[in-house]
Length: 343
Ligand code: SF4
Ligand code: ZN
Image (cartoon, rainbow, N blue to C red; front, side):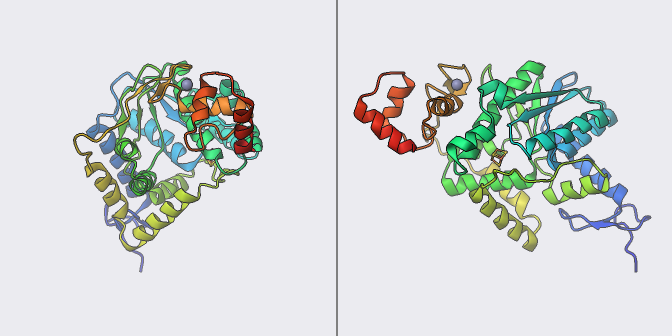
């Protein structure tokens, strides 16, 4: 017997909401999903009327749903936001070139301006070239550090007041778990924040309107709305550690759907004891980006790439690294040591 929608009681239920277990029709699902994002935006006061907002767009399901829902809500509730898409081209042939085609179609479909910033233009390196040099072990470290800065630089070029990203509840829960397992208190505190205030001139505030949206619901929303998105994984994706955290959370979710928000809430409620030393944010001596060290991570990684020493900035702190970064000459013995570490 067909099940009636538990929300409107009129139409036939088409799906069971992964988040609540309710059987609902398509329209009631769309409405509930959008209203929950609206509720997140309003209760956390994510935007102010008249702001220019860059939507970090990769062409994947999360950012495509984010762009779609932001546009719907901006019109429905008169947020008064000027929305635009901001994409990063990491230079990954066979992956990012294709997903950027999706973003370009989204630009047409949603009639939003689009800006693409590339690693090649910003750093002089594509991820293809970086992988050739560093291999497939630490590539995501380079990519993650460079992306964070690239988004900021793109946002500055677009003169946006804020960037919103497509991080969903599953992503946040995974990050909470990984930071707990690593004992990384500073990151734990940052990863649960729904928005980051500007941490310096070079950083544009970011927020996560999909923070409480379940990945499974994002997939259903994109599927039933027939949104145009790109679903292939990055060809350089070895991120094994996150993969385990992901599988673990999916297992928990299958036993109890609320596990995802429960993990987020516990992350939010963990507080740092008074007197615990936290990194002090300053700015990078070379590029001016925020950094708790004299040089930001991107500058250290870039220096390593440009000198053919890709492990600089990845391997454990080495007293030689300080000398290199200060551009002090090395002895022959020190040179040899570095070469062997990086070969
Ligand atoms: Fe970059 Fe790694 Fe993500 Fe690929 S999987 S886009 S290399 S961070
Ligand atoms: Zn720097």
